[in-house]
Image (tube, rainbow, N blue to C red; front, side):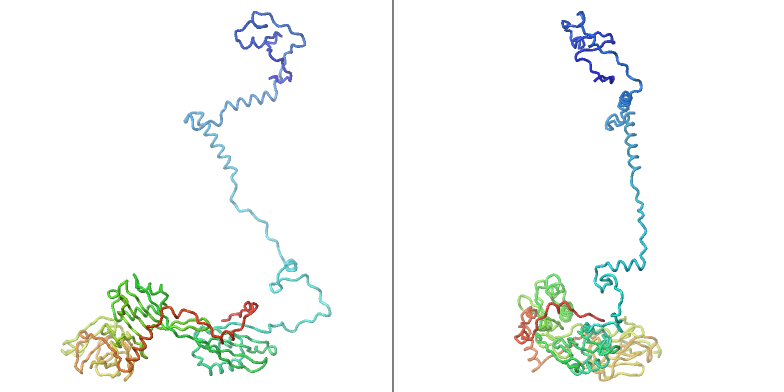
Length: 557
């Protein structure tokens, strides 16, 4: 195309020199030195016709194409985006850096704002609009929806005198701690007459005090006979004991209440747990499935006979038997520890079994042993020891036949070992005092009490509270004066250490050994197997409908 924009194309292979109308061929232009071609220098010019000569074209000064071409060349010369990795520090590099900074500022200028967008104000909904919404809701009527627009009342519409009630109420009530059986029934909605009748019938079956707190009662109340009257009790069932269920109901609608007992078959096979001691006796016993209370009792029982740190090895086998009951309905109940033992190399090393009404543990030989000697009567330091001293009140030297313990007023005083109260009351300079008689001709006396907690002739156990620290009698302040006598002669209490023993003999020893042998025949884990239902239990069990499973009673407090 003509660079001047004339729109006319020159003939191929010719060039115009100064507009003279003289043309040469391509061989004259490239300067190849070949001048033998026609039309070259020194040769005669080619003859052209008049119509082959193009006239000289004059371009307008304000042509857009010329202006665009000039601007494009100027921009190309500016070099606004040079390579910043080359010629670092030169004017050309700083020009490129300025371009980068400018473009960055321009991009940040278009960064969106984080200010919250203002939403449209909520629409005002009045009662009329709300009713319109409710008429269009697809929800149960009980949740506030309507089945459509309200129809206009006609003469056939009769207003209800009272809101209808449910014909029957089923609930689950729980006997709270400190609550009574009668108050629980009244709080559940049972009428006074039915409450009195139920309390009388249940009280004849079992003592009401035997109903443990937390017991749950399934209560069913019927339809009110008339407005304002309490609902009649239709049915009441609860677990009175582990082996007994009681049900109170009416045989006929409107009839009198009657009580039905449902005995529950219970198996009393004790639970035996054995395992290796390992690194921790407590953790091993708990990992074997022993209850926490049974493990604590097991450690306490063994600790009274042996040193748990020195006398037990990690390879020993612990053996514990706990009283356990299984009900045919699936409930289980663990009781107190019955047997505590340690085996070493398949041979019993320690065997202790609970025996007697007092629940004391005896060794397999029939000897009940309590190690550790006497206990301190009060938790406090000794202020004055046994021997001659100057009396702080009388002012002269006399025999101090006991120990004085420093303690605050009202601190409990305990018996140092098992014994029987031979005296309790005012005893001269001792003030309020308690005297105990122990085995082996020993007696102890506790003086200056503020208050006594035992009576004459009462049997006391080691560690039992017998009184409280005071300052009665010849005393300068609150403390305990503790004396000990052997065959009527005063001895230093700090020099006496002995062990309390109980020995079984005769027929009782034989019964003890027979019980121990029978107890050790229990298989470990045998009590964990569910009881097989008998034929009578299978026949009496009624199938439960699926709809009844969904209709669970409502729990009340």
